Image 1 (tube, rainbow, N blue to C red):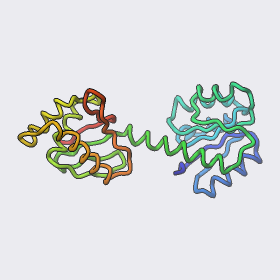
Image 2 (cartoon, rainbow, N blue to C red):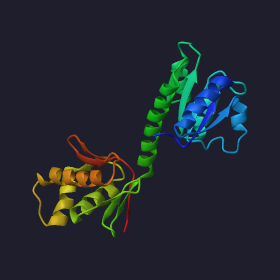
Image 3 (tube, rainbow, N blue to C red):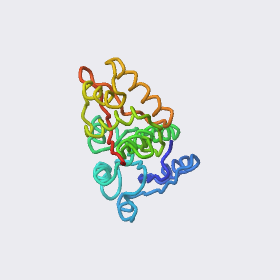
Length: 229
C-alpha cells in the first residue's frame, strides 16, 4: 500500500533524485523539492498523501516544516536525515513525524517504511470516516463502502450502539434490544448474537470491526456510527 502522491524535501539533489526514481518505479507520483520554501510556495503544498523530509534544509528548518505540515494535514510524514544528534528521534516525533530513518539508509527500507506508515494512515482515515446503519436497505455500510447484510436482531443491536454515541452499552440494555426483536432471549444469547454480527461484517469488508466487549460492562462500537432511516 503506497501513497499516490509524495513530496520529497531534501537538499541533497543527487540523493533526492535517485530516491525519487526508486519510488516512482513503485508507482508513487513523486515531486522533489530541494528547498522547503519551494514546497510551501506550491498551491498544493498540503495536498500530498505523503511527505519525506530531511532535517537540514534551506528555507525553514526540517522540524519547523514538520510542525507546519502536521498542523495542516494528517498525511504520513517520514524523516530521512543524516543528523545524528541523540535527541533527533524525540524531536521529530514531537514535531509530528511518524518515523525517523537515519542516513545512510537503503532505498528499499525507505519504501517499506512509507508503505507501513501509509497503511496506518489509510486505516485511520477509514475508521474516522464512520460507519452507517442503513435501516431501509437492512445493511451496515463500512467506511470503505462495503455493505454487510443484517438481520432484524442485528439492526436492533446496532440501533442501540447508534444511540450510545461511542459509549459502552450495558449487557442489560443489549438484552432488552434482543427481547424486543425476538420476543424473548436468554442471557447467553447475547455473546452468540454479537459473534454472528461480527462474522457478517468481517465477510463483507477487510476493515477491522470496531465492535468490542467491555469488561464487566457490555459492548462498545468504537467508531462513529450513524443511521439512515
